Image (cartoon, rainbow, N blue to C red; front, top):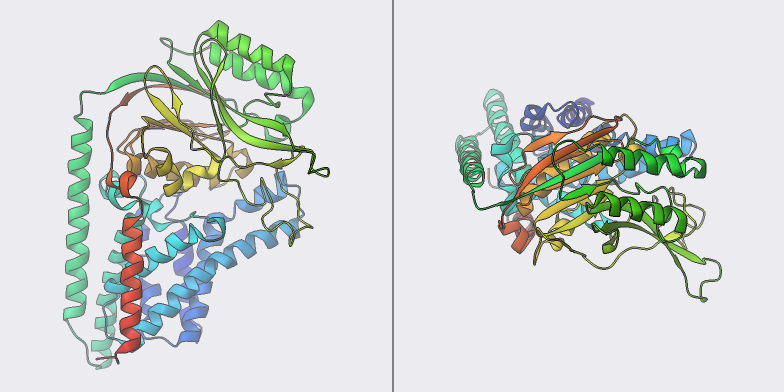
Length: 518
């Protein structure tokens, strides 16, 4: 009948509202339980279809905002924009289809509590979704808990995937209880040890995680040997269609300079402007280049800003004479460029077209005079007070990419972005929530400057110290404490994910090699 499909649909929608801006994080702890129940011992075809339906409801519910980026700012038609969003979510839903198919297949072959297979399998698929075909690790279940600080401190060991594991584990325990009661009611053989085992495992792991979280927060809050630096973030709130209109170049630059002149309190050590805050090519507009460097020299405060840089391509590319990079520059107190970072992980179809020979009929969405060139260097800015690395736009959603910047050194994570593309949707709220985990994973404070919001300051425990609203002009200043703290995740990376992959393969292999024991 239709019951498995309807249950999958509603579970997907319920899970979607656990994310920002609704922030109903408690829903995530139970939203998947009915979905897991209908997959248990289910026919493979029904399970596969149920998984895809669940995935479509969930991903369309959390990623509908991509439509606005495509339609309003990308200039794509309504049918084209809708089609792209649907195809992306359908692709992501295939992971849910695989999850459902494997859960049904394994539980048909061997009598195993869901708490043993669902969490590692789910986390394996989240990890793969974040890495295959350039990766898109949006809507990871762990992100629903970004404001529950005690639960998420384990991310400094496991990455965000450990929090996903915890959420799926609790859902699995609830499912195992329901399946046991279902079997008892039907008069079928039912083993009490399964729900009891699942409850014990879920309770003990959650208890240990929360205990670790509270201990870690207390320890980090008690650190006294840190260095304090004052950072100012300027949110210009420049409309997307004005950013690259030449008649607004002077007024856009003036907006940022005026806001930077009006900083409250004592002089900051660093001012941060958002991604592509400069409405011109910094190295190809001598007049505005001089105006900016003179301003920084007069202010005598280092400025980190996003800009596009243009480069002439070699003569071997006659059809493509220029390349551009999405970059971050640090101008020191004298107006000289002391650091440059070129964005490494470009946005597919936004800043470049993947498989260009096959997809020759598609143009990139971001307007520019040439193809975007990806950076190759994990650049680290050195200053009088320490060092920092800059992540541009959605680079902040890639845990391993952020970690690579801090393998050897680094005191501060700076994320500059332009979320005007997302409009007034859930996109900017979700994007901001992911930054919380990067601060915890690397145990570094994080500064975020967004053109239209959400800008903010996050400390090394993931606590949001200050944040701006959406689509408002704002300046926020914070005194940030820098400590020489590290983390297991920063040092060793995704060992927890590799462990999950190993457990998943082992249980799948076991299910094939032995017959089901009831």
